[in-house]
Image 1 (tube, rainbow, N blue to C red):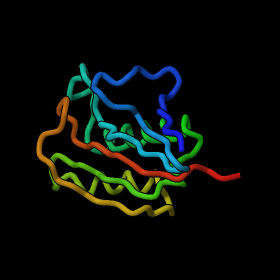
Image 2 (image 1 turned 90 degrees about the vertical axis):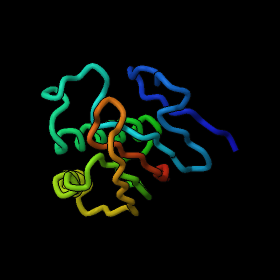
Image 3 (image 1 turned 45 degrees about the vertical axis):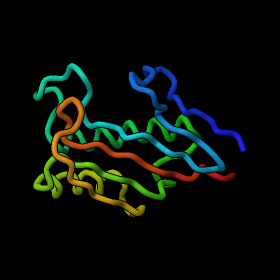
Image 4 (image 1 turned 90 degrees about the horizontal axis):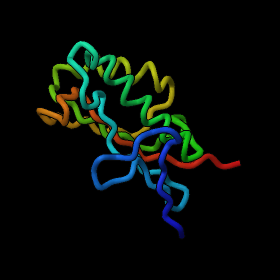
Length: 129
């Protein structure tokens, strides 16, 4: 089976030694997506709600580039800098995913890269015709 790198059109190449996602055997493995990127002030980065939406939007764009979507997510890992932020993060997560409830792990981490409050990775199935 072929291993395919998924790079959404128009998005910059990762700065590190990784791919935004890998597709293999009908499964898409999405790298961790931060809720905040480099160069953003705290005000621009927003609170945990904004950052959760941003991370999930990045995952959605990557999944779409792979030929699937959030409805086909099998599992997500949510890395959160402070567990006290969890209720607000979970609220946004539930709003975006709606009735779809993939398997999930919540991992309190302490500080994340660029001062992000949340990072989310995902595993999804490809859509089948």
